[in-house]
Amino acid sequence: MPSSVRLRVFLLFAAGYFVSYVFRGVNLGFAPLITHDLGLSAADLGLLTSLYFIGFAVAQIPVGVMLDHFGPRPVTAGMLLFAAAGIWVFGASHGLAGLMAGRLLIGVGVSVCLSAAFKASAQHFPVARLPLINGLTMAVGGLGGVVVGSPLASLLHVASWRQVCVGLGVFTLLVAAAIALFAPRTRDTRHQADVITQFQGTWHILMSGAFWKIASFSVVSQGVFYAMQSLWIRPYLLDVMGLTPAHAAALVSVLGFAMMFGCVGFGAAARGMERRGVSVYAFCGAGMALYVAVQLLMVVRVPLPPAALLAAYGIFGGAGILSYAVMAEHFPAHMIGRANTTLTLVLFLLIFGFQVGIGAMLSFWPAEGGHFPATAHQTVWVTLIALQVASAVWYVLPSRALQKTERTAS
Image (cartoon, rainbow, N blue to C red):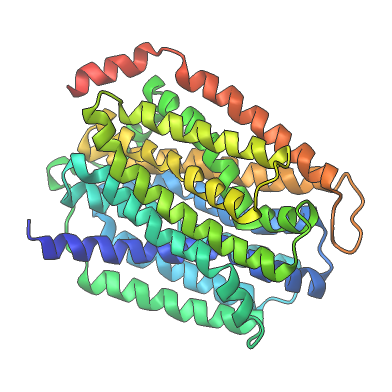
């Protein structure tokens, strides 16, 4: 396959994931303004922001079936239209209900972007290169995490958050049009089973012990990471580390850059480590364990510069992305779309739960001037670390189901 086609596939679908990532974290910048306008509580803000994730999650199974049946090009272009409509509804709303409807619609609209990028990569790149390509895709998406830091904060000094919503909708339409016009028209024609059979394939994945073994540590650690990065890391920086809003916004961008570096670094190193006898599964687990270690350092407030801690948090926070490459090793090519979207479904349900749960936990403490005591945040972090440690134990225990799929794949 010509390298120009592969480059086009990568750039177009990575751009789609960039849009998804901007929408995921845009409430970091919007939150103070929306809270001021509508008088939202921490629980309200957590629920509002997390509706993106619940919309994203509930669309995963049908999106996975559509990806495997129709291919990533038409599905991605079509779904992004819903995202554009959602951000316009969000920006035009003057009540919580309208904001929630818009946020939910955005989540549904961008629900395809990550899995479509991985599906398109699996169709056009050899399996051995998928960890790197997937990491690069995540890195481009991670630029969205950078954009919602200092760049968005600067933009909101010269434009209202409602005007920014209009611009985001227009940009989303442009990306959708580019994918529709220039992405290759490829799908798995050898496996075009009827839709009912494809839904049965999704059920088979959900009943697979190998799937849950691969997903266990990944979805919990990634759920914590994205719940924090897309909303709660900023209040932590303000309330616990005592930073100024400008410094906190800058560190959000540092976190985004670090996650990009981590995704590319882990993706590039995975196959090299495999040649040295370390499986992608084990390498992924080691990276996620280091992410938990960084959280412990932050909770005990080690005397390190905040930028160094946030950089480490971002680098190791992206390690779980390797789980998608592990899925490609354990499920056949014609089911990769559904395997990826099923993994994303579980992940985003957890992000939704974590965002709402964090907001609810923080609300047990009185907020003064919109700030919570450090004890509140540290209690939340300790709880999340305990959940990750429990999932890590499951991840490292021997699994007959995983060994069986390894023998089948070989």
